[in-house]
Image 1 (cartoon, rainbow, N blue to C red):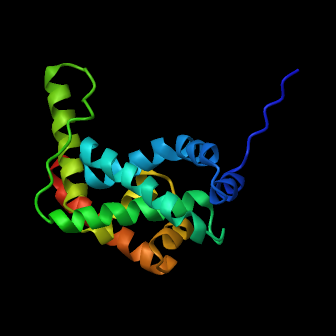
Image 2 (image 1 turned 180 degrees about the vertical axis):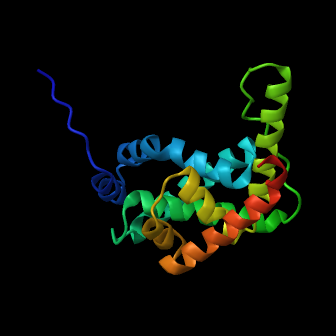
Length: 180
């Protein structure tokens, strides 16, 4: 009987720190979908998200020797990809085109159009938030991260996270007023 033992992330990091390329590749495989998803939700562009995710994993490889295990591996990865996305957002500072990645359900042409338009308005509202508001909103509402995790990822206090989320939610509600 073959027994497969799931190696935990911290063991993979420790092995990768010694130069074990297989361990690093396994770490990437485990987290690449989530890292890409966070980047996509923060940046709004599949191409930019793919680039940001790849660059984040390059940074992870370079930062492996410095990882001390004071936070979970997933929190560390979220921090790296979030910081990478923040750098990209700051560099472009302009209008961000909306991705057509999500399609409206087919419930009749008029309903489909309304749903598509509402979804586009929501995406636009989120993309127009400041990075300080967008990042915690995405991490909390779309990624399901706890306040404590977000505080650790962003290196801010839990009350600061809650304040940013409150302001972000208000901005989105104001932007979506016509759809409510």
